Length: 362
Length: 212
Image 1: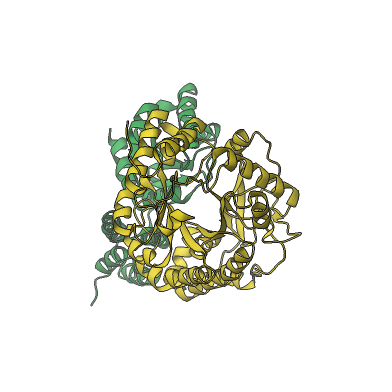
Image 2 (image 1 turned 90 degrees about the vertical axis):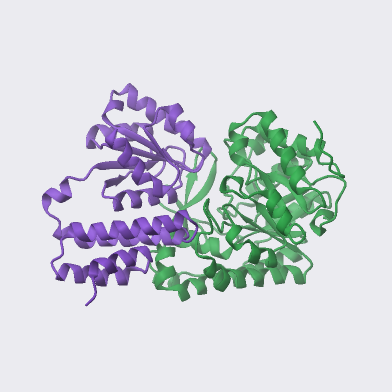
């Protein structure tokens, strides 16, 4: 937790926002059961969830990580609607398809074809019992050994996925106030969830969902200023009132909205190098305000050699670690197609060269 | 008196939304302006919007909206196109390769190719090599375009190339590849004919490979 206060700890903390099942099983030497998704809840099968939490804790302990993220749970007894084509529908109306290679469910469609559909759709109830099952179970298992990050889904990203890109964009032009209301509704949900995450004794809030793509923000910065950021601020304020830091994840090139973002959140995860995010530059500009989490390239974890990954990790440490406020991780998560030996090389290099004061050699 | 062609170009350049585009397209059609001239104005506007996106003045939503406008305009013009005009388009099939369910990039490329005057058939996501070969055999497109977001799906692109070669259809089509992890080196390595770094580039790359 020292590093979150921009103070140098003994060593640079290390984490991953997610480790996909194939790697998690190899590291934890266990078999996962049940359905999973990195973006939403797909089951309220508590046995499967407990199994996944146990595997995650074991893997993160073996890796010596200092921070473990944990998703919300679906409410007790909830079941997704299954479609005849093998897809399912989550609580937010997103149609999910099963990625057989990664063994996770990913949003690929939407049940909403018109804004009227959304008006008739029952909004998820934050107070439905059971949503803190996983976070409470994780806290119980890790004790004070690791920091615990409670994961929420960003309202803008949620709306973007709920309506799919074409409808979202069309309504951005034709029904901006409708989109604003949806984002406010999801924010209302998140505000209540953050309070529960606080009660479940998480240490910080992690907000998933992208704001940007390779070239820049997904929508003009004005929409962020007028709609997205006031709602982001509402969530951050609830976390801050309880003394929790708020970390925002986003892939893509955030530079055009980084000034505003740095005034709202406490940290950024990803710092996507494939989109031109330079962790050294962000550190120079916002290092006093933002905790940085990243950014060993996920593409490089798939393609490059161990030696190259070690060099890249040293580069991240050199640029972002001095002064604290830095957590080493990949620029997203350990994908199925990442070479596990590269992921482990990143961790080893982090341990070897991430000891304060940072004085990287060889 | 307004100039509908200039206004159509402006609507696309400024990404002013469907209403503006519809109003001036209807005006142009009322004035018996040839569909080919309307399309030319649209392309000029689209190209200007694409440049603004490349330069960071526009964002993804503007690029997507210009694509939505282009598709709507194409629909409006369909009844006015001569049979030979609508049948002489170069056909491209496009899909996200096996193992990858992402479609945003693929859909953007589809829109840009359509706007550039190609007839584009969308094969969807998670498209197997067998499906690509079957479509090439049956539909005889001039170009196959493959997209992926996940690194894990890059092998699938190579598989499509191998299957096209094995089945004897490789020489029948030009192959384009693109997507977040794809590089020009990778495209060359698997023997693709062209690589587009983004959706804007896709149309010019497609035209380029067809003239080779």
